[in-house]
Image (cartoon, rainbow, N blue to C red; front, side, top):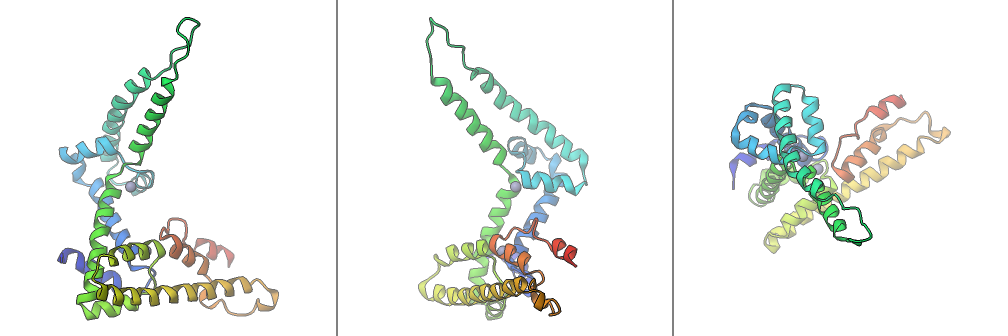
Amino acid sequence: MEKIYMIPVNDAYSEQNGCPICRLRDLAEKNYLEYYLGPSLMEPDTRKITNKTGFCPVHMGKLNQAVTNRLGLGLVMHTHLKDFNDELNPKLKSAIPAKSGLIKGRNSEYKHRLNSIADLIDERVSRCPICDNMNDAMKHYIEVICWMFSHDNEFKDKFTKAECHCLPHTALLLRQASSLSQNEASDFVTALYENNSQSFDSLISDVEYFTLKFDYRNTDKPWGTSKNSIQRSMRFLSSDDRNFDEQQTKKQN
Ligand SMILES: [Zn+2]
Ligand SMILES: [Zn+2]
């Protein structure tokens, strides 16, 4: 099993703060954002890729916010725009439908051409080397988690006591578990089930308490752990924490 993935997996499971696989994803994302903002931008091999792919909307936003290496970002953007233009606009020009005259009659082939150019645009704007690399890293992390669960008792204990596994990452773990032997899968899914049902129970109870706090009779009761239960539920349900921070809760104070 690949050691380079074991250390970050162990670290992520040593911390109690939401889903450890979300932490691994954030770490992988941070590393790839730094990579694509670093000297790699000047390497011809990397540029060959980014000229074709550009970045997805989420990662363009994160590269934009990173503010370091504006020149590098500008160079990448320049050659990517040129590449996109070179591919798209000749096709777009040749797809302009001819006006149907009385002599020529109607030709519906243009409909197909317009849709296929729309498909080309949709496909190109969704490409992203950061997403591709992250998906690849996540695949390794998930493999390593399942392997360590069966081969490392200390890790097994950490896995069982993890604060939660968000649902999209639970799905990744289940897909990987389906490739384990039946006995290994039995132990792994038992631990996952216990972890998952505890997460549901505690979120359901915290969110209920949160709603009950709005009853005037409960105004003086303490918030306990319910205060950020909506944000924690959102992170649990979607694993995406972009807009699920606790700012809103702070405003309520
Ligand atoms: Zn997660
Ligand atoms: Zn991306």
